[in-house]
Image 1 (spheres, rainbow, N blue to C red):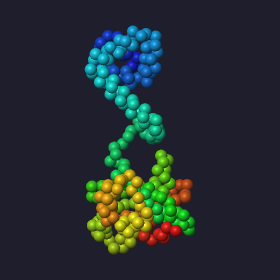
Image 2 (image 1 turned 180 degrees about the vertical axis):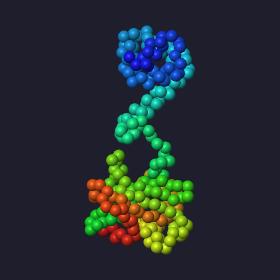
Image 3 (image 1 turned 90 degrees about the vertical axis):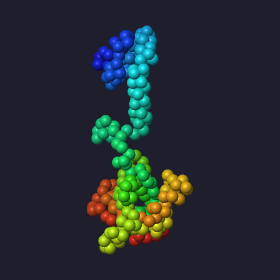
Image 4 (image 1 turned 90 degrees about the horizontal axis):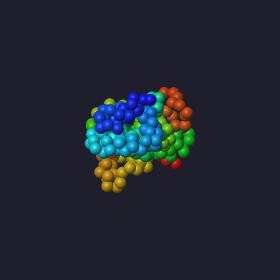
Length: 235
């Protein structure tokens, strides 16, 4: 049997340390063996319970482990991270994510002769930096677990836009003008929140890069800068 079980067999006497408890609970065979013994030996279960209740360190250790197990179970109820590329199922800090701002907008897909593509809702998931620039991943196929980003939009303030070379400015769109044309919405904000945020966003500029063309199975060809203000109006 595992190392955890060997420690558990000593728990009829009050000599288990929190370190032993942690080692025991890490044994993958422990839970199955423990339940089997409890069914066959009610006195062992009573001794186990008494020791936990009488030792505050062990009781706290058990509570911490239970909370950790519950977190893991809740995660497993959803879709787990890739088990091969993330074997420890690590959740990275939110600072690496694109969770500061969510915008939905049409007129962000090149039509290529198909006007209906102008009506595709592109989800922008943005990370905002301390200098008030932002980077937004662009999801034109939805917000499911397997929807992939097709591009990225970089956002700068009006002051930063003014510093750009004149020939570069043609690639950037002014959000105060383009938000209405794109029917932009902010689904995660209420009216009072949007009233504070919208004036700030209005005075920003965006540049859209696509490395994956809508409708293609895989990213094919060269990346492209999509000049939003040159797109036709929604049909």
